[in-house]
Length: 177
Image (tube, one colour):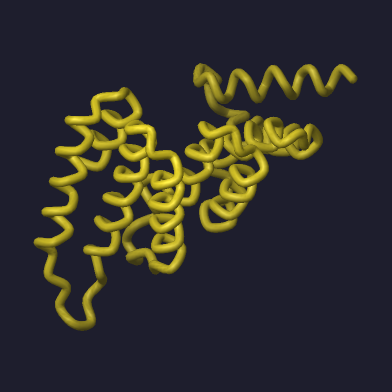
């Protein structure tokens, strides 16, 4: 439901996104957390809020989108991860960065990606987002640093992803200077 909600919102299918967000809310409400057990309900709440933020953006409610996404990021930051899970499926702070990029707020987006990278270091999407945000904010040296780190992280990858191609191209351009 999480992926469906985000995909639908990002593709402008607001009715489908709204239905998926509502279903996430139902799932969230149905989870009973016994005392002393891990609170999976919070994980669903984070996912619902991320999806809700993207839906608000798709509906043109930009201020609501940022407010909702910040709340999701704050809840994600305050939530301990279950020991058997490696981390967030899609870090909320990273999604806040993506939203702020969409809104043309490079400086704030860069800060969100940098905060996300503290919790989830070397994530391809985090490094790529931080690089794009730094470039938008006019921080060319920082952008090059993030793209160079992305190149290093993906040095053994086949390089077919657009993000990797862009980072490698930028690294090649920079090396020639």
